[in-house]
Image 1 (cartoon, helix red, strand yellow):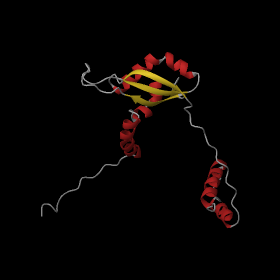
Image 2 (cartoon, helix red, strand yellow):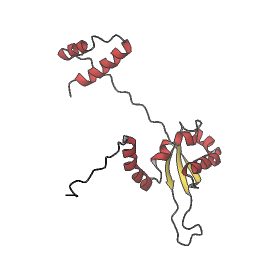
Image 3 (spheres, helix red, strand yellow):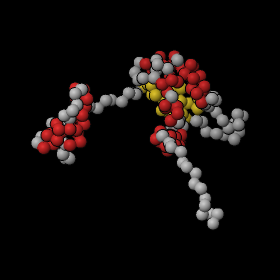
Image 4 (cartoon, rainbow, N blue to C red):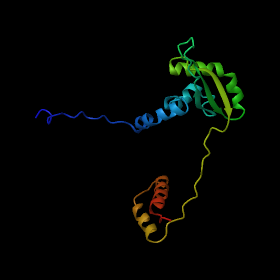
Length: 169
């Protein structure tokens, strides 16, 4: 009887970011040696001067050797992707950046930075505008938007309605 009266602990609500980080962190740690916390905090770590033109890619940790004096731990090499000529300025700011990264981790995690020149910002893809609705679908959308007076809102609802009511290809 006592087993039947077990109380169940309520699970707390979790944000989707917590769930995603729990899934992604082990994969990132295995593949690149970094965490989503480092990626998410990169803007603060790099500062406004380098946040928009750089991103961390991976940390290469040296192989552990049993005969190592430091107890098997050595700081890693952080690879940072940086755009164009800004890489030169990032090279000059390496010492400060290493100090900021190590302060973020709370221990000397990075001893050196390797800079790779490559595009960092994602290219914005513009989609073709949808063709206007015709016939019954156009009339339904017009009926739904009758009470909307704000022009910006009306345009947004028109775009949304056109996308939703468009026939599947």
